[in-house]
Structures are given as structure tokens and as C-alpha cells.
Length: 563
Image 1: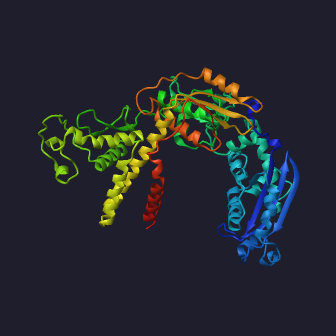
Image 2: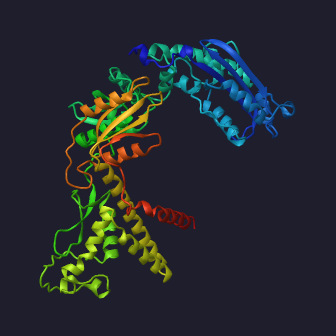
Image 3: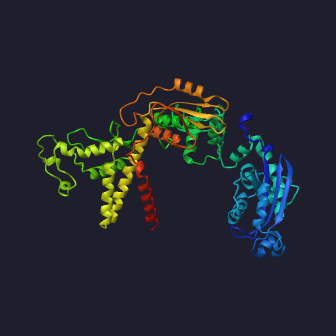
């Protein structure tokens, strides 16, 4: 398929290639060992310059290498070492695509030399003529893919001699001969050449036409199968460019190749900016639950810790959000750990029996005998006496008190001082889980409580990316380009924003993952609050004040792992 001009990327005639060849003293790549560097810079078939020098490898050159290359130890004694040659070579090759025959060998030695002498390896695009020849040439064309054989095939003006500059000059003609072979199969740009090198099935390559209609804007893309089912959902800053990568060798994941083989169509949804694309992705994943996505397909499968509604409340782990709930937790196990920690710190009962308010006649359990429960089941606690424990938990959830956290920490300190270090470590880890849950709950709830919040982020070109949030959900998104007054755009976005009706619960019905995504975006440096319907704040008695203790615990855990 012939691509449109706007899809071609960088035309090959405009690409600067530096064809390089190394001679070495043998052995594995390291800081030294290179004996010669030869390179030729070309663009559009024209030679722009050459680079060639012997290099002191700081080692004796073995006889077999001398026989192969003709480079002796005496020849390189007066040559500069590689740490003096590298700056000049890196400048010569700066901004160019690196080409070599068996490029892995040359790039490994160059990268090792850079790392060994304190130079930054520039990570250039690399084209291997050996790999390209194997992809392009059949056995009828040549029985060997050695440089000497290819030089004869393409009538190279220089014969390879195992000397760096001669071999680099020969590789120039080999490269041009190979590029002539790939042109008729649709490789016209650097991007297509790099995608052509890995092994890709013809069927996979043909399907790149599915991306032809997609916009080159931020957004979401959906791969659809034969029955219009959504196979996969993803986001990209450039939808067309990202989708085309699925039909090239750059996509090596077997699961994705299987998905591409099934795909019949790709839909693109343009978005104002990356944040809107990420939110739309989450919503589409929840709506379609695509078979080839691994994450975020069940955004409502969160766990919450709640107080039961009875005279002697206890903590229960549930999957539905409600007022006064603590969460969300990503797993039932974390929620259960938080509930057990709270119960132990407050003396709340953990049994599941329903205890009447009047004249309870149950039998005390082992926890009561150990002093860890007041035994309300046996009438040893009145409803009024018991009410203090659930009130402490309610205050913690609301952010008006953190007494249970201090009680849990005091118990840990007691265990440690008594020499019960393993038990203290377990209780410490349980408190960390609780603290993280409380911190997440307060941060998400604080954002979800705001009826409307408008924020802006610089777009990198002098304009602004704008977002209207309502009760923890993205209600509208847009951009004010450079030179456009932003406030009229803000007013228009607010007027057109989605109406969000809050539901009961700390998150007002918003999906926790979406609210968390918005929270992380707002917390990124450079964000500005344009307006908000109420102050955005977190509770004073939340987990924020425990950050120093958490840092101390993290340091201690690291030392334990090292030990």
C-alpha cells in the first residue's frame, strides 16, 4: 500500500546516515580494545564526510587479529586512545542514523567505550545492513550475507579489506543497494525502514491500512473484531502513529500480534489532551471489558470497611460504597487487615453475632478472656460504654481524630520494648496498610466533595490544557492555544460540562481509579487552579501527619531487606 505524504515520516533522501566500522583486538566489549574506527557520513546518496583513525587499544593485538586486519601492536602505539577519539567521533555522528554491517557488534563496543570513559551513549537509531540484507535478499540473490559478498553483488566501488574505513565505504554502497530493493515494497521513510527490519508477517503489515483514517491528535483508539466487539483499548498522543506501530516489527508482544490478527477495524476518538484520553480509556475499559486489556476492566471492584448498623457495631468488609465507609482498598485482604488493625486498636468486637441492646446473654470468647474485647455479648458493656470505640473509628474516617492510629503505634512500641520483634514488625506492617488506606480515602474524598473545580496545565507551547472536574469526575476538557484568552474558553467548557449528580458515599459515586487519575494530574508540578466551588483541603487528623513515621518505617524495612 502506498502511504499518503503525511504518513511517510522522514523521507530516506533527507536522512543523514553515518556508516561505521570498527576493528578490535578481540575479546568482549569493554572500555578499551578498539584498534580502528572508520566512518562515512552520507545523505541523499552524497558523501558529506569521512572519519578514520587508528586507536590505541591499551593491549597487545593477538596474532590471529594481526593476520586478519593487518593492524599490528607497533602500528597503534602512537595512536590516540579511545577516550580521546570518542568525543570527535560522537560529534561526527551526532544526530545521524548509525549504520553498520552486523551493527550489534559495533554498537556494543562503542557503547561500552562510552560507559567506560564517562561519555553518554546518544542512543541513535541503528540500521544493520546484515539484518536488512537477510530481510530483502533471497537465496537466489546471494548465498552469503557477508560484507564481501554483498559488496560484489551491488558493485561496491571499494573492496572490503578488514580495515575500518575501507569496510565503511563498501557498506555505503551496500546500504544504497538495499534501499533500492525496499523502495518498491513501500519503504520510503526512516520510520518505515526501522519498522521493516524486524520480522513481520505480510498479513500484519497489510493491516496498517486500518490506521489510514485515524487523526494525528491525542485520543483513544479501539481495535474491533469481526463481530464489532472491542478487542483492545489504548491511548496515544498521536493516534495514527501509535496504531500503525501495531502493524510493524516494533510490536513484539505475542498477545498483541494475536489481537491484530483478529482486528477488522480501528476506531479513534479525538481528545483535547492526554488527561481526557486517559479518563476516556478508563471508562471504555469499564464499559467493554476488552479481552486483550489486562488492567482497569473492573473499576468498581473495590473494597470498603464499614461499621455495621446495630446497637454494638462491628467492622465489615463490603464491596459497595456508602456514607462513613473507609476506602477504597484494592483487595479484600488489605481491607481486612485495615479492619482488624482498627478493631484491635479500639477494642471493637470482631465476632459476627448480632447482640441485642437489652439483656444480652452470650458467652464471652477467648478475646474477652485476653482483655482484647469488653464482652458486650455477655452484658459486660452497655451500649453507651461501647459507643466510644465506633465513635473513634467514625472520627478517623471523617478526619476529625486519629486516636486509633496512636493506639496501634503504642501497641507496636510496647511489643518492641518487650522483645517481641517479629510480632511488632507484623503489627507495624498492618498499621502501614491502614495508614495508606486512610491517606488514600481522605485524598480521594476531598476531591470528590468539590462540586466543581477548574484546573489548567501548560501545554508546552504557550497555551493551556483545561479540565473541569465535578465530584471527582472529568466533566469537560479543552485547550486554549497560545494567543487565545483562556477565560472565555473556561467559561465555554463550564457551560458545556457534563452534569454530575453525586451519590451517597465518600467518593460521591465517582470511580476510584478516575478520581485517583485526576488527583495525580492535579498534583503534578505546573498545574494551576482556575476556580473551585469550595476550598480543596484534606483533614488535619488524616494520614498526612504520619508521613515522617511512614518514611522511618520505609527506611527500616529497606535495612531489614538488605540485612
